Length: 235
Image (cartoon, rainbow, N blue to C red; front, top):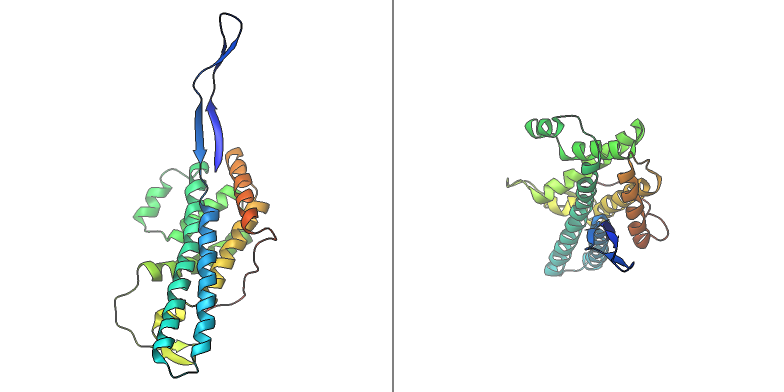
């Protein structure tokens, strides 16, 4: 929560005393750390569910196997969606403080520009990212938003079972895409990039600089030892 006093008027009264008029207070709640915290909680649940799945998989209890798979799927999906929403929250704050060319938002809507491209462009302008950093950000967000879209807008088409790389059997696609290892990948990658922006980004304006300080403080509570290391691969 950021508090600022937007309007405070003082005047000298008839007997020399200082009188204060009404105070206008502005509040801003930064939800970016909150969504990362939610993502991490679901990630932990996904890892716990995976451990349970591994424990029951060699047994003959098919119901236990099904419950463990479903629990891992639900927790992993929620972790990944929360990680994506943390970028939506960051975009929502930054977009009001960057200068976009006239009509660019309308062009995005008309041309149905992918959301990850829009978020990347706003973050690029807000923190003066270099080309290599922009390329990395865009590629990572493309994957995170791909998983988010699979969660929010899944195809209703009946599909064949696909190979689960951990179980070595065919399962529904959702159990393959939304599993603990992919949740860890998306959440840790999002956290690492946002922490890096908060600590090393070059703000394009005083307003973004002020927000960067707020974001840095909020993230320090979540990651007192720095952002988690991002795994190098996923499926």
